[in-house]
Amino acid sequence: MKQQVLSLVVIVALAVVGVGSETRVTAPNNKYTPAQDVELGLQAAAEARQQLPIMRDDAVTSYVTRLGERLTAVIPAEFQRHEFKYTFETVNVREINAFALPGGPMFVNRGMIEAANSEGEVVGVMAHEVSHVLLRHGTAQASKAGKYQMGQVAGAVLGAIIGGRVGSVVAQGTQFGLGTAFLRYGRDYEKQADILGAQLMARAGYDAREMANMFKTIEKQGGANGPEWLSDHPNPANRSQYIEQEAQSLRVSNPVGDRSGFDRVTAHLKTLPKAPTSEEAAKAAKGNGGGTSADPRSAGTLGRVDAPATRYREYTEGNVFRIAVPTNWRELPGSSSVTFAPTGAYGQANGQNVFTHGVEVGVLRNERHELPEATADFIQALGQSNPRLTQQSEPLATVVASRRALQTRLENVSDATGQPEEIQLFTTRMSDGTLFYVIAVVPTSDARGYEAAFQQVVRSIRLND
Image 1: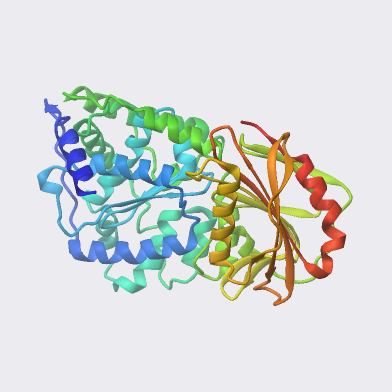
Image 2: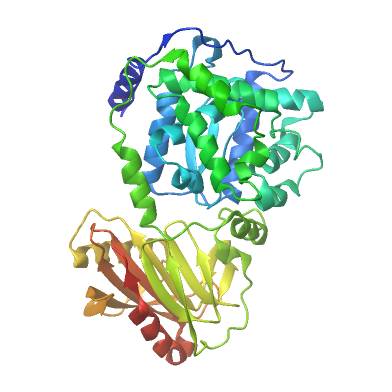
């Protein structure tokens, strides 16, 4: 591992620009210490991880981390601080947004990556956010608002940086009115982050003009109301012009050549169910009461469950699959799966998000490409999180989406009701070897009334690979 990191640093160091007349950027006055930046950032990051649906997909997280490390490896000496700890995580929400916390934690929305046209555009946003950290803009802005204890400020910081409805949910727990003042920067700070970010990009081997291109992309895709990112990062006058002018003074001596990673990660994202909106994440966060997951299922309340409707509604999940479910079932997106369940069948039990009736459909990467072995691995993984799960049959050959599949019958004792439940697991392979699965769940007492609905749902599935 250390060898890989050192190799990355060497490669990036070779890409350091030949500086012409780059603009000098100076950090603003700040009453806080760098150590307090770190403390504040760690507290707010912990809250963010509780409130937001963080992606746990290695293909995405490793790519974003690699881009972040390229930038942090070339930080100019005057901005290097040994206290700062840089981390890079991806949030599984649809909106175009990204934010970085004091001391180094950064969160990039999946929607930001999907909106970009190139790797350089993603790097441009990340370089801008890293620059806010280097210039300590968060605590500099807090210095203007007055002195507050770290613990009292953390919740307000999170409310400010996340923005939108998610931010309003988080900020409800704070007693200070910093939600719009702490990290929603003014145009002067934005311009500083643009300039320093352009310099970081060039040092890391990227054309800084791609930052300007990304801002144009953000504005174009934001529609009439503008994307969330621009509400927190106001657009300074002549932004594209001064970024492009700065880029002309920055000579990249050894540009990053292989950018195929961007194509791979964007193609991979298209194989996943579509990301939820921030509104859906906010409802989940509110229903979860500050728990450890922003799964939309936590926004529900377990209770009376109606029988499946006889009419069906079709859903398209990204470009991965189509499915039709009873019209009284709700779509509940997750990071790599989507659940369809009726009202009263999803919510929380013992601090965990659960559903008692319905189906979960998802994709799972597995290194073992034979379907029986991959299915066995998946069942074993399910058993680790459901200790009372038992396998009741050997996998039987069946068909899902016109391709070879397996059907396995399982039984469990529900964490929500304490009653036995029947589970039908359907598994098949997508063209790239990814495991595609359907988990149909129903209490044993209701199984007969759901059998026909489950069969119809599975028959309706169409894979788009």
